Length: 279
View: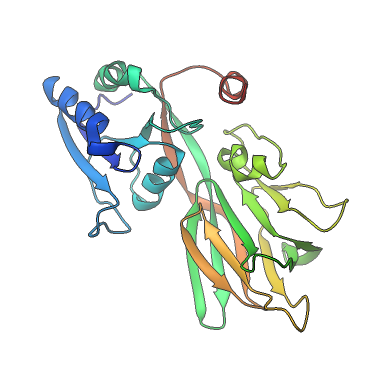
């Protein structure tokens, strides 16, 4: 693989208080004779995109930090590796004790890259359309804390089901170990290309997760459940970009043309990782 010479260290100042670990990485990279730039996430002037000519981005934080990097890199085809400063960390490859080894291997090109599938979702309202990509999931959930919402799901233009629930998760294989797993959905091998749909607390014993193909186009519409209810929803992309939804609003979901490139140093398979992370 490419020998990395220019690094961007993406620091989460909530996870890395006083930026101790992020600065440690930057200092070690410079000691080794390579270029390192420090980007601090959460600053007031931070934009929604990140322009860089770095060979690699090192995300310092947890899975949320990795998702943030995937979003703001936009369509820049730059590989990302994460240092876990959080708890479980399915996306983060490296522990704090492995930082120097990580840098050494990146410098000599001793790593591999996984292409992770993303979803693209288009929110369609009377005011227009807005689209975003998601590495983990697109979630449509109730906005009211006390009422279910009713949703219709069409697959490739044909009605598939009507669901009453707290919401629905549409997950990538990467995101299958996130909210999808907590909601009772299946764990999927990251390298596959498919879409997992998992209802959140459905009002039915028969509603279960469904796996759709990578070529399927899904469209979810918020229905009027009760005349005396608000019937309002909220759609979120990787838990970040959030949009309010009213009755009749829709979200169209399909596999994105974009991917996220994750650097891998460990040759452990997904099942070994799951056993290590989940016990």
